[in-house]
Image (tube, rainbow, N blue to C red; front, side, top):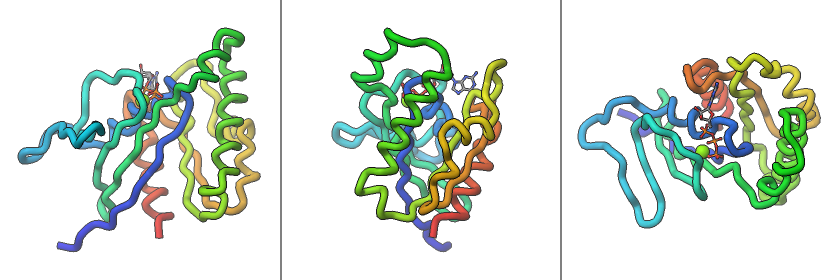
Length: 177
Ligand code: GTP
Ligand code: MG
């Protein structure tokens, strides 16, 4: 058959927001053929779902396929020495949103990102939690309407149950040229 187009995805977000859990859901549950966790030098490359998700150290490289694309996802750790320090001075999700917005603004103004019309997908994850903000509220707090030079989309998701994730990947697939 036709070879699937290969795309690279950078997965960013604050620590403990659910990035690894979202990505885990996109991978097949059962090893097909001889696939299993592979190690490639110092990088950790795995191709099937795992039961135990631990905070990411550095980053992991994950691979999965959709109907027409072959994704390589860089699952980055959300930790930073600055944020770890900040955590001693605040609690509560509203302040986490401020930190997330700062990180997003830094990302979008970086010269390697600014000049490119790459699609940006947001997950308003942990929508199952009682105090979860709606995706509309999250997009307001992150000022997503200000992103004019890239297509973007936000999905509410529950990465533990796997809800809302496929919608996001479908959108991403439709917006990759
Ligand atoms: P770092 O690797 O530290 O940057 O974190 P991460 O963003 O990869 O988060 P991770 O996927 O490790 O999830 C952190 C915790 O949140 C885990 O205990 C998950 O089970 C939990 N979690 C992830 N998604 C959801 C969700 O949609 N709902 C609920 N209730 N818990 C979730
Ligand atoms: Mg992680």
